[in-house]
Length: 374
Image (cartoon, rainbow, N blue to C red; front, side, top):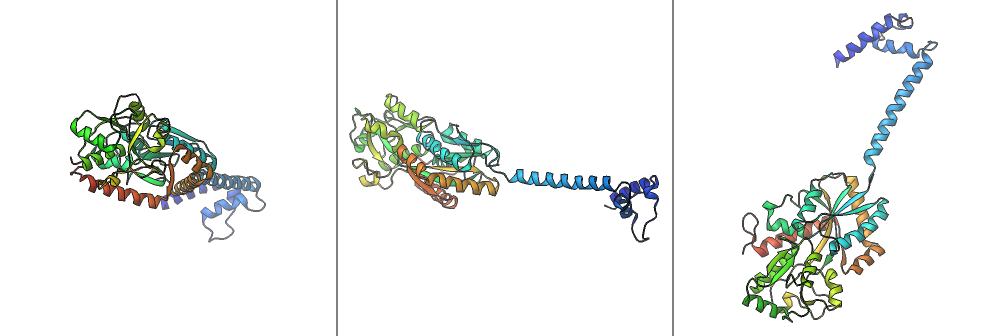
C-alpha cells in the first residue's frame, strides 16, 4: 500500500512541477503533497476548476450507475424463461400435470415456462441434467417418486444423490397406481393372476418405467407378498408401457389411475389391484384388503432445483409454485387429468422423502451397496 501511494505521489509531484497551477506553494505547510496536488484542480479561481469538477462528477456518477446496474442485474429473477425438465414421456401423467402447473407458473412469474421431456433411466437422465446444470433458478425439475426409488435400488449406478444434489421446492401431486390387464385376459381377479404367474414362471410380462422406478417396486411388493414374480419390461414412461399392454406386447401394466382412467371407462382394460382405495373403483382392492401386509406405493410428483441456487430465487419459486398448484385453474387441471393436488412445503416434502426412503430400505432389506435383496 505504501509503495502504491508513493508512486502516485511521485507522479503527481512531477505533474505539479511541470504545470503553472502546481507551482503555487501549499497554503499550509502541514498539508501533504498528495492532498495538495488535488487541491489546485478545484481551488477557487483555478482555470481548470469547471473541467475538473465535471470530470470528477462524471466519474463518480458513472461508478455509481455501474454499481447500481450490476446490483440490480444480480437480483433480478427471473431474467429469462424457465426451463421445466420433465423426466417421463409426453402424454404421461407426470407430463400432463407438469404442463398444467407450468401454465399457471408462467402467469405468476410473468415469464415463459418451457417444458422439456428428458427421459431415460427411470428419470435419472433428466434428474442428472438438472442436478449438474446452472444454479440460477432458471432450470427446474419435475419428477416422480422414481427419484428416490432408483437411488435406493442402485445408488452406485445413479449419478446423483437426491438428498444432496437437489433442493426440494414442493410436493405437487399424488396418484394411486393400479395393476391393469387386457379386458379379455383370463384373470378376472388379482388372486387368479397370482396363481397363474406362480404356475407359469417367466411367462407374464409387466411394463414399468424402468429398474428402480416406483412401478418396479410395485412388482417387487407383489413378489414379496405373494411369491408371484412378474417379468418386468422397462419403458421410457408409463404411457408407452400402457400402450404396450393395449397392443398385446405385455400382459400386465402398472399405470397411474390418471393415465388409465380413459381406457378403463372405455372398457379397454381390466383393473385388478390398486395401491390406494379410490372412490370411483369400489370393486378394485388394495393388497392389505386382501390380507397382505404391505400395499404398493402410490406415486407422487414434485418440483426440485439444483442445490445451491440463490435463496432469493428459491423463495420466489416456492411461493409461485404453491400459488400455481393451489389456484382454482391449477386444481381443476390436475383433477381433470385424474390426479390429486397434494401440496407440501419444501420442509414437509424433504421429511416425507426421507421417511419413504427409510421404508424402502427396510421393506426390501437392501444389501450393502443398495441392491434389492431377492
